[in-house]
Image (tube, rainbow, N blue to C red):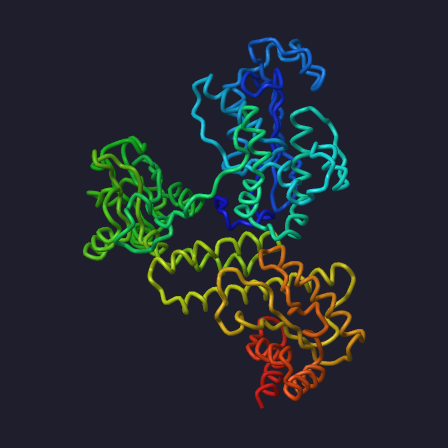
Length: 557
């Protein structure tokens, strides 16, 4: 799971909706007696697994608090400690974004409990559905869970239980995502900035002793994506902890382990543990195994892996710059280096594949994930990786014009995949297959290869036959609307000028487009010149490329 960034669309973040019940309403004094949590993925609440824990606070629960949540001293008598619950909670949430209603209260009481139990505390990235609802609908009478749920037509079950309120907060968050898009809030960073602008609500929480419910934007960390070998250190590139096996382990079992772990080497030692000086280890690589199988055939599988290992182990310091690792591999003609700390202890392994990722991984991964996305949420997650790739390219001092071309290529890939998914939706919903051949076109800066980092939609559809508002046109109107919706959800907003295939002016048969272009060129009104400028930069991205080529040939004839 890749960690969320400010560019990650809300529909694509991995989140956990959480809630606590406490001994009282004062965040500066209350003790936690119940924690509830549930997962959120692809903009939907994941009903299983759930977390529902009772905690013995070691002190009495205020009667007025029991009247609200129904939990009494008897209920928590014999329950586990906060420290026990905290471990389970941390395991459940992992690195996910936390979502809750008035989550500043929950963060405050959880932090106080951690301090009291001498547990490490790091404030998680979080979003408050109370603040998000204020942004999405500033006219609600109040922003209680009940009021927000009623506006969104959601039902709440188990109110004032930690799990029930966590589920309600998760359902509300999922329902708020399209409402926030209407206000041009699509990403985690945009949501955080919008919440931080609600100064009155934040100040009220601060006075009550609550934690700040959202994280403040931080400057992007350029180091992790900077591909220069003279800026990266080996420790940031290596794989660790290393996989170590005992020297006596049969080779067949080691091969099975390497296949299962998808690794190209293992380290070998008498103890089989990764806690010894570098001299204690040897290495076995894929090539070592192939050579031994080639020479000894079936007998090789039963040999102890220690008999195949290469010693002494070639190593490099974790603090060394990557260019030294590249030079050492080249000089010694090896593909793997053990990595040691300054004390000479084994800490990891660096492969030639790890160094290749230094330059290639981000851009390759971006294109691959777009092309294999299964829905709008996965498209959104893929598209959110683009800012990091762009930062990496700019860090290499790549010509900005080349960067713009790369952004445009990814926009075209995104539009192509969205069109494929939209067509699949059409058939699932009973609209049938396309009535004739067609092509989806990207227009404007995307077609020219000059997109910047905040593109909106500029697209069109040309189809083989059919008149305006005929059956073919109506089918493609629906397709265009689904395409526009999918791109908007993915992080490419609707075009304010209406340059989208859902608009009749940017959809039509080949003959319709020919008449349209002739009309634009003949009249030459300002809006006609603008349309010519947009459409003449077209790039076909999906469908019948021959049809698109005929349109291009006619337009430029």
